[in-house]
Length: 396
Image (tube, rainbow, N blue to C red; front, side, top):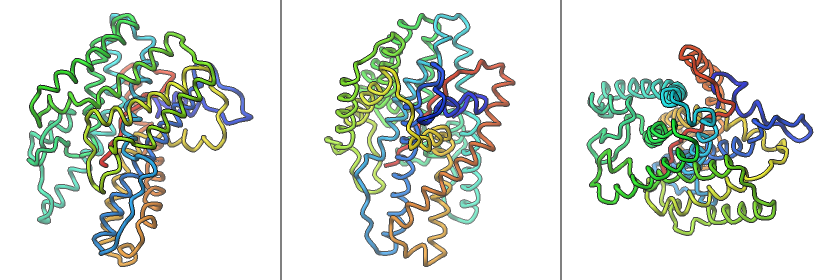
C-alpha cells in the first residue's frame, strides 16, 4: 500500500536479485511479501467458500483445501499491522502533537475506500430489497458501519457491519485508538502501555456478556496486534538474532501454522472462525515467530520470484475490500449459465482469484492511490517511508 503515492509504498523500495540494493529505510521487502501472502490466503479461502456454495447447490461435492490455514491471513495482517505501526510512528513518539497527527494518518488511509465500498454495497442491498430479496439494514446499523462500531446489523446476533468484511476494520480501529492514547509518550513506555491496554481489554472481555460491542472488542484476537508491536519493539531496540536462530524460528513458526494443531481453520465451508484464544495460539504466535525471524537481522536481497507477492501486498487493502465483487458476480453467473454451474470447484476458484487480483490492481491504481494522495495533501499529512498494514477479513 502507499501513503500518498507509489513512491512511499514498500514496492518502491524492494529490489530483486541483481538490482541496486535499497536504502536502510526501504529494506523490509519480507514484510511486504508477507502482506501479499496474507491477502492471497484470504482471497483463496473466500473463493473456495463461494465455489463450494455453487458446486453443492448443483448437487456435486467440493473438496476444500486445508493445506494452508487460509483464515489465518487475518491474523497475519493483524500481526503485521502492529509491527508496521510501530515503525510508521517512529517520528511521533514523545511528541506533544503526536496524537492528532497519528489519527489523521489513520483516517486518511483507512476511511475513504471503506466508505466507498460500504456505500456501493448499500446500493446493491437497496436494489435487492426493492426486488423483494435481501432485507435492508436499519439506519442505526448503517451509521454504526460507517463509524466502525460493532453492531447486530440484521438481528441475528452476529456483530458484522453492513459490508460484513469490515469486521476486521472494527478491530483495527480499536487498536488505532489504543495506540493514539499512548503515542505521545516516549517509545518504550508507549509500546509497553499499548501492550498492557490490549491485555487488560482481553481480561475484561472474560466477564463481558455478549454479543455486544464491548464483548466483540475484547476478544483475544486483539492480542495479534500486541504480538506485532512486540516484534516492532525488538527491532526498534536493535535486537538481532544469529542466522541459525532466525532460520530455526521461521521453520518452527511455519510448521505450527501449517499443522494447525488446534484445528482452528479446517472447519466446514462457510464456518466462521472464532476470535478466541485457540486462534491466537495456533496463528498469532507462530506468525509472530516467522515475522521475528524475517526482521530481527539483515535482510537478503529479494528474489525475483517474490516480486509479485510484494506488488500484491501493495494493493492488499483494495484486494480485501473489492474481491467480494468477483465472488458475487460469479455466483450470479452460476444462476444464469449452466457452464458455470457445472464447473468443478477449482475451475471456479482459480478464475475468481485471478479476476480479484486484476480488479484490485485497477482499484488500487485508479482509486485508492489518487484518493489517499489527495487527502494526504489536503490534511498536511507527513508521509511515512513505510506503508501501514490493515486487516483483511477471514470469513472462514
